[in-house]
Length: 422
Image (cartoon, rainbow, N blue to C red; front, side, top):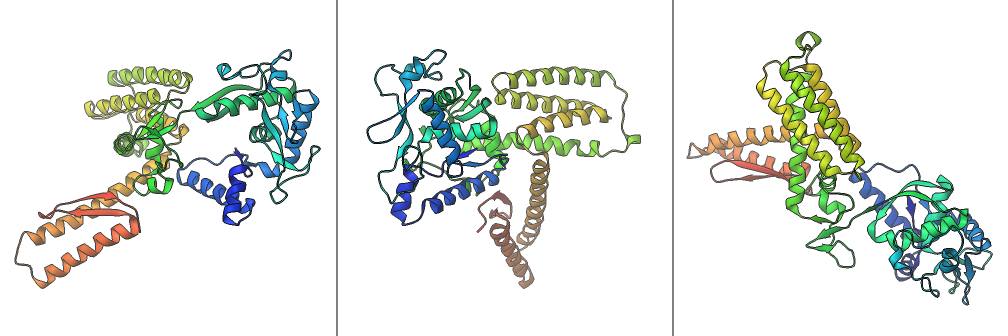
């Protein structure tokens, strides 16, 4: 993963805040990595900062210029010559979005090295004078420093398709004198709120911390999995609730089969009967369909739907049979949760979350039964009032210490939901 820790926005923010470029960029880098950890996103193998790859970037530009695909303009910037590249044998500019390229003049040219115009700004020495890298060249040089001359899969948002990813392709092919740099691009769609793209500039965004105050990380992951990665996703509480409901379906199935998986060998039936064979047949068909859906441009909505159907089929089997086949149930369970794990839904977190919910439910029900028994026999004694006061303190402690908000009704009944711990 590349970290752009030097650009115009960072330089301007550092000036306005009276801070250094390094301090500003590290602050946002740290916040980003913490947010990813909170969402249970796996850490990357390589985290690459632009400021730590200046020599590699300069070498990259040097080769591009030596190959004739760059020039120095009248203010000292090194600029990629898109028309020269496009008209060279074996090359094509604008591969990812050809309609955006007009092979005339300099309008598609872009900066590889930005000459320093302000001596107070951050800069590095280069063969073309003091300056700093352009945006597009950073990613090409950094990724090539790790992966070499070719990439199998390149990811990013759909808004980066042109010009950023297009220019990355051109730079790498210009540097390596090749005509195939990345085998596959995975462009993700945007997240929308109230029909508009989520954006800091529009102030219509929800921070990770704000989201996690009311929801668990896997709810957001499941919300994403229920949509095609290339599609625009519309965020709403209702859609997050739907995602959480899907998680609960898997968790309740896991809880249901837990006693079966815990049986000793002498308690488990292994020989298959007709119901077992029918379930095996359906299980096999679903396995084939899941593989096909993932091979179909990573169709995760279809995958989740198929896994849910396997849960429903398995539940129907368990409802209809007194002594289920333990080996078969183990195979199905292992398959479902290994597939979910490969999509980032942890089996361990699934069990932990379900256990926590059950514990909370038991505690709320116990408190509820005490309040109900006391309130149904007025007038209240001093001891009864003290017990009710203790129940109120427990309700407050649950909210402030573990983020569980308990709501009491006049009749003594109670419901609970997760809130933000204070």
